[in-house]
Image (cartoon, rainbow, N blue to C red; front, side):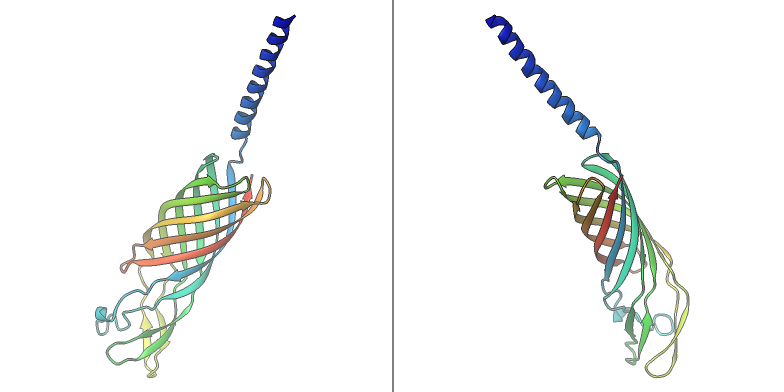
Length: 217
């Protein structure tokens, strides 16, 4: 009788352990593998160029001061595991107004900066901070397309100033960090910060804080 009781207890313990193991495996394999992101960002461009780059008749307004402009984007991320994913992110950056200055005579001209489209392929590593919150670190590369045309403006001295179109296509490298909070299995929000280094003729650095709506399926 005693042996039967011990045997039953051993079987019960083994059954409990097996059930817990299979449950953990099933839970791990049932994670949602696709994530769609709708994003609003604020692009902060570093100052670009210097007065020493001045070339009369060719580069009369050589320096662009730092400025900021809003951007909107979408992203699609595919998870290969609960902690690792590959994502595609596309952002459309709007324009802003900046004052350019001719260092030879101090004439200024108020111009509209160029809109751009930035596409990035990134690798993401997720760290679970709690059941609902994750830290996301990303690293990737891609390209920028500037919507550039020769544009004529009137300078502060009344002269006509033509701002020539810049090279439209440039490669880029990007790195980011974000905190993602899920309200449930499918809906969440993310606060993100990304740095983008664009290899233009004069390299451009953009720092972009963003707020995103996250949908998992």
